[in-house]
Length: 399
Image (cartoon, rainbow, N blue to C red; front, side, top):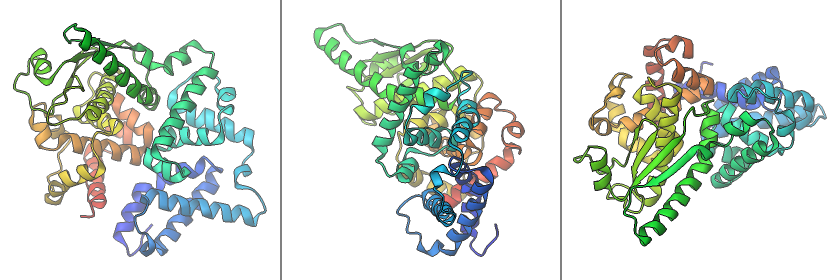
């Protein structure tokens, strides 16, 4: 698409494929493609009316969906039955769901027992690559409700499946054990039990969907060791002079971390709970590919954990982006404490988010498994991907 508005051209490049995937869940590909193209034409014509009350993706998606409804209203047909339902369900399973999750079993009957909304939420998250915020805007539910509904749907799906391997894929939480490095007093035991409960419950909401998203069942069991405070944790990992934000590390198949009861000046109880998701995701990516680069496992981990708010990420990186000081792939391999000072966590997250939005989960999974082959994953060299990402950052930050 070409037009007078350069900003809108960038939006077209960023969201076209994603909206096409979204509409393809509802109608055949050709109809979805026609509606997507027309939606961007309408969006450009009405760009001055966009007030930022929702994401750009959601706004254009609503335009596209309304175009579909109007078209099917003209034909005196219902949009939800525009494609033969049996054909639609089979397509959803064999092309979308099974491709991403790699379940070599027939899940048709199990998926049909889920509600239409549950199937849509699963597909929006895993196939289209929507964030929870985008899904909440599309289906008209709170973010917390979307997360809970997704977890319940996955649990129901697991219960419907008889295949033993599928049960293992869908219940990763059972492979995680927690050990306390606290003093064995009665009070310590009571507090430990509370921590165990909170960590497991927080992981339970997240780990299954992360494993599904990354198409991987862990090959080993994971142990989480909890140290009573930051000082004992830093001593245990031979980093006595580590900064206050350093609360966890992965050693082989063990996560070592400070207790959320003593979060120190840089953390809170909740932020350390979120950090367990970050650490689990790093461990999972390394289990898939031990040679995965730092920017990849840190970026995916930060994205899945949601530790940093969007406002904080943008505010902390804006000046660097303005100056053109966006780190290269090799610079994001920094293994010193300078990684935090160069905003490595933020840039890694933004980079992985960009890859997911631009190339989908398929591209993300390819680069995890072949991190040195950008051509195979994205059909372009690493320098071109970095250039696309740089342009995307400037567009997001309106620079």
